[in-house]
Image (cartoon, rainbow, N blue to C red; front, top):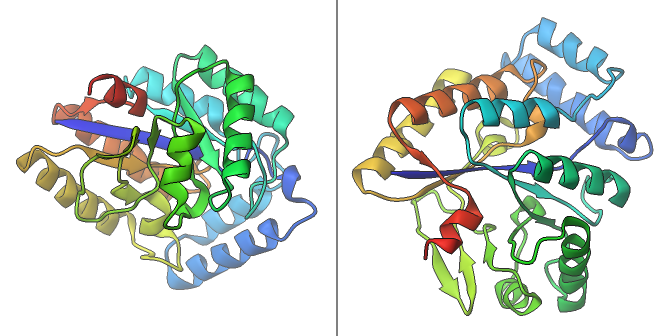
Length: 265
């Protein structure tokens, strides 16, 4: 039974958001979580104080170490353009890419442009130059796409995309030479107030049911966890991820990354 775990990098620091509305939005959502009883006052204060913590909202090294220790063969998606809350510089993206590559993990593009072939190709070429990789894939930020996006990604040279979301365990399929790998579970959908806003217990139960179904039907399952949430400031997120890795390991799921899946076809 195969499982793919991946990590989108939406933020690399708090300070990159000093001139936008991400921090006020974050505290507003945290206030909603507090009022709904999803987080404790202690966690709320920890998040507030954490805005001034060195390396806040990064947690990349910690997650790399955790995945390596637990043999999670994950893929990290790094953006090389800005929009919709992604504000880190190309220089910071390059540092993250080199760190991830040095630790031996799979890499892909966290895509911004999805409507224009020229913009898509520019991100592809920028990532290829920075990473030194010749074959890689992409996931669009906020899972944005239209009826032409996948064709454009194929033409740009990407070998896979994992933007489509399917709660019904839809399996990988080709669009031209591009392998589309539908995503099945995302941390934000489980916990954010504007989506499901689940407790840790309910999120675990929902995930366990889907994992058991995937195992019974012998289907690949594809899961996303954002590196920003690998922190005690986000106890539901981190607790869920730690449970997920333990459960998958104990039940002998095979951790696979996207590039490995493509090579095996």
